[in-house]
Each structure stands twice: as C-alpha cells, then as structure tokens.
Length: 349
Image 1 (spheres, rainbow, N blue to C red):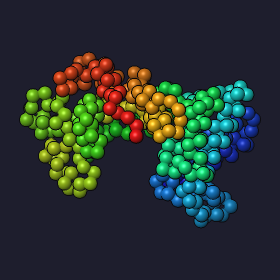
Image 2 (cartoon, one colour):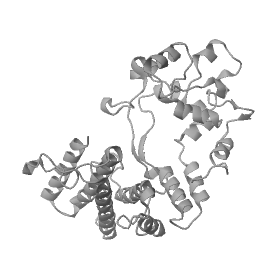
Image 3 (cartoon, rainbow, N blue to C red):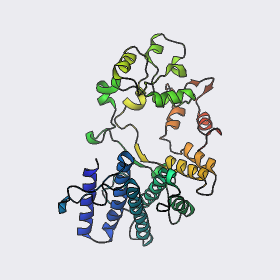
Image 4 (cartoon, one colour):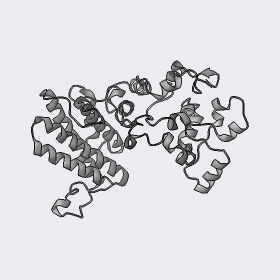
C-alpha cells in the first residue's frame, strides 16, 4: 500500500546522492524518517510486512520476506534514531536550516528535527504493551528524549504541526469536502455515533461545531433545537447500510456541520502529527511512570492550543454566527471552552 511513496523516497535518495554536497544531505536524512513513517503505518495496519527485503525489484527480488512486526518496529525506531542524530549533527554544524521543495514544513529543518523526535515518542507510546521488552527498550528511550530538549527537541506549539494545508484555489490541493463536492456526497455522509454520541453524552460544546441537528428537530421546530444536545444523533457503525439509509431518510441522523465542512475549498489542515498529540503522549508516559513530570500540566498544554485557527477559537469568538449560542444555561465563551477542555476529571490512564 506504500509502494509508490517508498519508490519516490528511493528516487529522492538517488538524486540527493547523485548531486552530492552538504546542501543535499538533509534529503537523505528526511528519507530515513519517511521510510520509518511508512513502515510503521503498514505494520500498524497489517502486522508482519516486508521491510528488510522490500524495494529490491531492481535486483529481481519480487518476493521479499515478511518481517515480524517486532522487527519492523525495531528497524523503524533505528531509522528514526539515526535521522534524529544526523539532523542534529547537520544543524549543529550550521550548514543550513532550510531546504527547497517542501510543502509540509516549508523547508524548516528545525521543525523536521522536532517532528522526527515527536514521531519517536508516538511510536514508543504505541508500544506500551511491550514496555518491558529488552530489545525495544521502550521506557528508557522515551525517558531519554523527554529528558534532553537540547539533544532531542520535540514539537513546542501548533506551528510545528506536521500537516497538509489545503488551498481551494488549486484543484489538486482542495479540501476533500467543500462546496464543489457538496451535492455529490454531503447527504451520503452522516456523523458516526462513536464520535458524535460520545460528545453528546459528555455535553461537549464541540458537538455544535462538528454536526448539524437532526432534521426531525428542525421539522418540529423545537424551541432552541440547535443548542440542545438531544438534537444531535450519530449513525452506528455496525448497522447495515439499508437501516442507516432509512434512518437518514427519516431525518433521525446528523450530518456534518455545513459551515465547517462544506463552506470553503480550503477547509482546515489535515494534521498527520501535531503538538497536542505529543503533549498527550508525554502526559500518558508520565502517568505510566516512564518519565518524571506533571501529567496534568502536559494534558492541559494539549487541551489549550494557542493558535487562533482552532475549533475552540472558531467556536468562541465569531459573533453573529450559530456558534455563539447557549450550551445548557451558559454561553459558549473562550473561558467556558477552556474550562471544559481542562476539567480536572480528565486524566490519562
């Protein structure tokens, strides 16, 4: 499933080696990271996958062996460690901190360095059930990264997010939903119960940001229906398609929020790995006893992102829109949003 991407990474390595010079060294370092990213993704989905003998069709190896999942993780972590070490050495030598042709992080090598180490943390926390494996050394490696920001910088804010930023003016880079696809698939995509019903159960004000009230609530013109949690309902993933279609036709299920998902061609970035996740990861590791620190502090860092382009800011600071409404008996304000997201009852476990 990642053959095309891995082939492109191979070609990038070949071109960087052909051109040579310090200015092309970062592409070889980033190639290590991208290969690890691909193999981690594949093994998370499929378990045992080819890695040690993969991408060898040029030497007529068309049947590479499948490596055990543990070995895929071990090799991937080794690639990430090498990439982190080489990137630090490159930056410390003050060769340069920018590259060309990078639409993900705008060529900023310091951000790539943070991404590599943050990906190491994500990978290690995903191995929490194997934390005591002597070969993987999960806890020790995690603690070493967190303990030394100078050697192992990690994401420090949402400006470091590894994300795809969409552009509605470029056809090949449009937001996947948006107004041009509205007529085709908006009515075919209801909100899932696993997501929406959980928000409703906890009276989470993000309910109003991501979903529309069910049509039956609108049709009966229930007073204040748009701000009632009871007006929002997701479809259950396990239901057969015919049942979901019937529920949809009868107005029992919520669609995605019209303004959020269908209004513009630029939408919002698709985050592959972001600062909040990194904070949650560290909070969980502290809670597990892998590293010193205050888990609640890290949890709160993740829950209060500083950028204006966040769901919380859009929910809380746009006057004259349906988002500025009553939630239970309290207005949705920035203070209320932060209070909700940082409730002391929420903890990593």
